[in-house]
Length: 269
Length: 269
Image (tube, chains in turn orange, blue):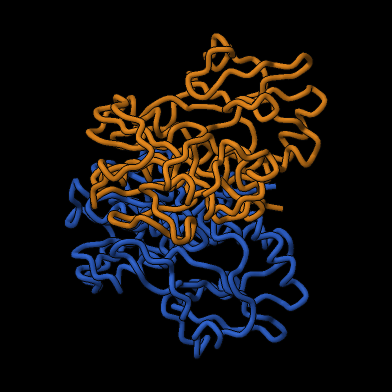
């Protein structure tokens, strides 16, 4: 079996999604940026059936942060997004929340799985990063080999039933001359967060220090770049932390589900 | 109080949504096409809380037929779509289904209302009709003063939990030279069914006789026109009829909720 961490960038990029999922299933753990290039990666939020309506309604009311790509109904562990896969094992790392507090970061969910759990597969901004790079816009966190920085903001999500919380954003520093291009390109991907929600001025979002993200890693901000903020699929997890349901499970930020769907499927004209 | 049925087309078109809702609240009954021009009209599907997740997931999986404009959570009877209104009274006519069978067509829901009912407000193709007319495309059912014809098709909706059924379509005969324009224009309104799902060839959709619609009225088909089919917000009601939940409530086809939201709000570039 291949060892993901020892593979070069080209080999990681060329790996089929099903092969990558198999390595994660076998227990390998790595952030997924750069793996299976061209295939959509996704956020997870898994909740018991009785909370499922609130989560789906939360997503419907917050489509920029929570674009739903698919839903596994109670008892279902796979669908066409992860053909032949198993949602309980195929993500490198999970986060388990009890009463809003993270209690574990397991690499598989066997210990926590129940047949009444409903899984929401939520679009991820990694999908538009290849489109940005193809247009000559470099992505700082990829260049620096770290996870994308994510921040809780002072923008409240629209609440739904028991679910309420802050919008979480991901940040990419973009050269000032390419910010307009970044807006144009990402707005063609509404199913994976679409256009930025904010450009420049982190203070206005309540972010005091770009070097201290709430999730992921800090990036070095190259001179001449502007911080650009996109709505982030970690938003439902922030709502879970605030709303404190008895049980909820997410992916570990940056450790995504790699789906069988091509990024280009989510592009609109 | 004004008498809607005696008003001319111009007066109906000029009426504010809140005024129209007030007349319906007072018991007046009329199909809503042509009333409060420029404001979005909407389909309704109302179900008990325990079915709400299935209905919302059904909508998420069938976005062309069931584009959600808003959701009133259990116990809620109004929101920003019908400012100061009441969903139980402000639609001219409702349809009440018990075990999938229509048992009543009341003009208000006082008798049926329960605090565990959840209301889904679903986009309606009436919204793009004004855009079509502005581009010189005449709408046969408006010209002929009847309700739009709607048909159950042999296309199955994606099912969700207990909800499954056929896609329902609305039909407008469009002059062959304007069909491409109709596609182009309506594709700019994804929140209200968007581009047609089928053009020409009703047989392929399992429609045997255009003169015998399943909902609404038959229209005379002008010579030189092609029947163009759009996904229709009556689709959830067709799923209710097939899936037979203990209770579900819809609007009477053509008798829509008139919202405070301008049609133009739902237009994308």
